[in-house]
Every structure is written in structure tokens, then in C-alpha cells.
Image (cartoon, rainbow, N blue to C red):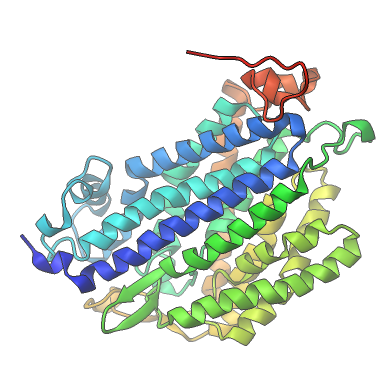
Length: 451
């Protein structure tokens, strides 16, 4: 028995990750309510069910092999033979590192076993969260089996590979100087997948065909506002899990740069506050309060790459302009006749902006490597710089678009993507047409009871 694996100091980071799990669940609940409010009244239950299935599919994929793909970077850094095979053998769902109590794992081979096991759980929920966001880009128009398969691949392979590249201190990009903290590059990845999915799924009826009577108007903006509040509450707790809490040494960002928990949460608050001011400007330009409501989300994404290395005034200044980048992408989507006012505008615009503006405030900050290592993986041997931030954007856009094209088009050409019932007059009654149940019953509705 290795008592150092379960000492109070060893389990302190685990507690932080457990708090993060609860926080991400709050954010996930917010995503569900947000999209339910924006859907038609007759499609609310369909929207809930599709997002649940997508979230569970991505979570299953991540639990099977995704975490092992992410851990691949550490086996490379520590010189393990056949690092990918070793990581999969140790950290896939039936692997010994996730099926053994931490006190029985040798710290010489699995340091911090308890916190890594908690991080495994966090990765599962992380995949579910991003899959639910992805499903929100194509509400009211796609087949549920197709969406589930897309989410499965997204959670099992695409998100983990992105994590291997930049989420951690010894990934190929992060070890050379590309910086991310709260997932800006993952939002870019998500935005690329949503863009391809929206393109291939085609618009909802009434969005661009001039039929005002068929326009997909939000049925309950109160749900949307409540969902937004839950999402922001979750982000407050989620932000801190993107780092290492090292007893007696301090708090480090996920790329092992020097940071502090107090600064991180202060920067989150600054992002919410100043982005709301920017949202007021966009509300006036667009004459639509929706852009004010989602402004704090754009603000969070705009600082997600840099909140562990920026000063509060820098985070606030960055977030102030985030709604303008969101609105710019939204207008481009309209021009291209692509039906998504949420995911692509909120992720691609502010996400790329976040990745690039990081270099403006943090060039020269040391990061990368790992404790106790030397040479190309030496502790903080690399520095943040504009060139590597640009490289990260290019790589993630390329990986996102190419992988999405392969997966989405393959599914479209085999089982089909768009639900034919949408074009057969059921576009506003998908609850009844697909589930036989409704979120809101009307007088005369019959209740179906199943065994």
C-alpha cells in the first residue's frame, strides 16, 4: 500500500476536480435549458432527448479510449517505449490505472493516481458538455442516430486528439509554446465541427425561405435566460480545474505556467462584466436583445486561453470586444445562408480571437515540460509567443474541418443526416412525430403509458 497516494495533500487536487465535475454539470444543464427555450414549443422534448443522446454517446467514447489518447503525451515525455500503446493499455476503460484504488498504484509509475482518476471522470463529462453544445447547432432538423454517431466520434477521438496536442504541458503544441487554459482551441474545434454539420444539415424551414409563418421563433426566452445563468455559474467552478494545484508549490496552468486561483476567478468575473457592456453595443447595432444575453458566453470564450496568465484589466479589455467578433461571424453565417445563431458565432469568432490575443499579453511567459524532467521536456523550457498561437489556430482549424468533413459526409451518405419528417410537415411537431410524447400537453391530448 502506497500511503502517499492518499495523503491529504495528494487528495487536495482531487477535491478541486470533484468541484469541477459539479460545476460542469451546472453548465451542461444550462446548455439544455438554453436550447430548449430557443426551439419551437412542439420540439422541446425532441431537443432535450437529442442532446442527452449526443452527450451520452460522446461520454461513452471518451471513457473507452479518449483519456488514454490525451495521456499519450506524458508517456512520450517520460520516454516510455511505444507511448501510445502504453497509454491505451494503462488508461482505457478496462486498464489497470483506472480500475485500481490509488493506494495500490506505485507513485513511481503513476504519480498522483487519485487526482488522475478524478481527471478521467472530468474528461468524460467534458466530452458530454461539448457534444451537447455541438447538438445545439442543428436543433430541429437532424436524425438522432446520425447525431449520436457524430458525437461518439467527436468524444472518442477528436476531442482527445486536440487535448493531446495542446491541453497539457507536454503535448506537441503546448510543449513548444502554444498556450491555452480554459479550452479556446477546443471551442475552435467545436466551431469547425458545428460549421460543417450546419452546412450539411441545411437550414430549418422558414429561416431563409421568407415564410414568416414557418419561422422557427424561440418559444420560451425565460428558459434561455435561466440556462445562460446556469452556464455562467458552472464556468465559475469549471475554470479552476484547468490547472495543477501542487501543495506547497502553488497553482499552475494546464501548460505548467505560473498562475494563481484568485487571479483566474477574478478574470472570469471581469470577462462577464465587460463583455456585457460590449453586448449592449451589439444589441443596439442588431436591435435584438439576444446578443446581449449571450455576450457573457462570448466573453468567457474570448478569455478562455489567457485567464491564467493575464491581469484582470487585460482580461476585461479582451472580453469587451468579444461580442463584436461573435456578431461578425453571425452576419457572415447569414450571408452564407447557414442556420446557426449560437455555436459557430460564439466559438469560432471569440475562440480564434482568444488564441491570438493571448500573445499580446503573455508573450515570453514560461511554460511546458514537466516537473523533474530536463531537455526538450524540461520544466518551463518554452515560452508563449505569437507564432505558436497562430500555429495552434491553423492546426485546430485544419483538424476540425477535415475530421468533420470526413465523419459528417460519411454519415450523410450512409444512414442520412437530415430528418425527412422535417420536410414533410412535422418541423414544428417533432415531439409527437418522433417520440409520441410532448413537452407541453394540449386539451384533448392522450397520455401514452408504456410498460
